[in-house]
Image 1 (cartoon, rainbow, N blue to C red):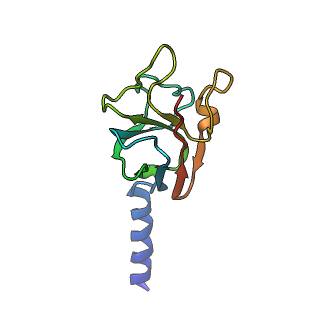
Image 2: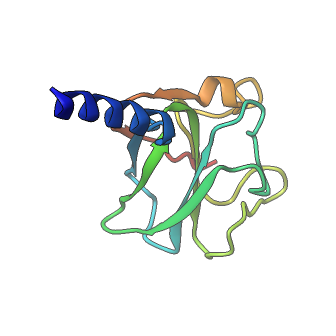
Length: 146
């Protein structure tokens, strides 16, 4: 009987002093149909409303790059807390980490989660690009060349 009481007390103390376990998940992002295999694909992950558009990549939560193989690239962000996220993709052909532009439009491919086209009337924003991460997830993002 004493062992059961001690075990119960020990478990209760451990529950009080142990930090809470946070739900974490993996997010795999894939892109296909890149127009060439030059450079790398930059994957920027956002978790704050109003953080995109982020033309100079200053508001991201996490960022990473991946090689291009056969017109495709992918990355996995691991151990992400449960929450709301959005993705921004840059086909960074010259590996300079920024969006190169012509007169107004990007010269390199860009993409956002939940977007199949971008225009003056369909500008990227966090609310439209966002999705809930509450389990391990794989998403595809379309890269748009203007």
